[in-house]
Image 1 (cartoon, rainbow, N blue to C red):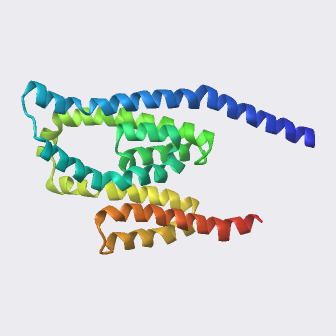
Image 2 (spheres, rainbow, N blue to C red; image 1 turned 60 degrees about the vertical axis):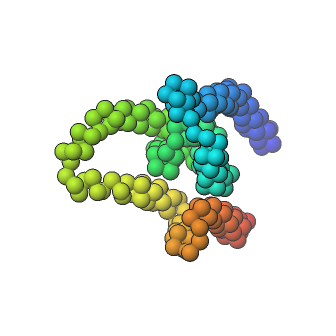
Image 3 (spheres, rainbow, N blue to C red; image 1 turned 90 degrees about the vertical axis):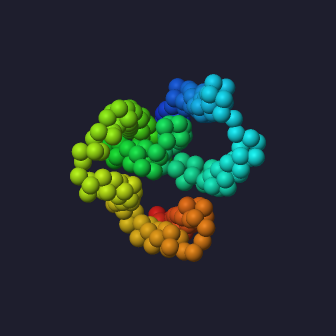
Length: 235
């Protein structure tokens, strides 16, 4: 029995080492490179306006804009990766922040792929399945955005007004579907965190604090549930 366990453990360690060497290392290298290129590319429109068209705001305007952006995204810069990483993994974080639209598109696509592949979140299989799903969503998004950019105005002009008005409910619908997927896996957690998040949303607090407080609440509830319920059941 000990020989069998040792062999199984050795095989698992070999798979872990191969996964790290052939996938994780290359993914981190390519992720850093593409993210750096994307970050530097964001300066191109401003440089074009300044160097080619001659539009150059003074430093007071630049500083004011920078302070507004910093105050709006400083906390999210730290909180969002912590909130998304357990579900998306490292590769999903790289692709998600490069492509954008994480809560509306990338996260649902990743979870749908993991569900279809019957892969648990936080596992190597889950990370690979989720990466394939989020990668496919990028190509689909690019295709539809291209079509919308070329023909969007004409399409919107012929759509009934109630269809145009319904676009405002797209994000809540997607988030509701994600919540439904979580509910099938952990009914108690969803039943607890949903009213907590609604409470933070309705609370008379600055809007910048609502998302971080929801993430912290989710961490605390998850920890308490695991410590006092899940862990005790296992023991």
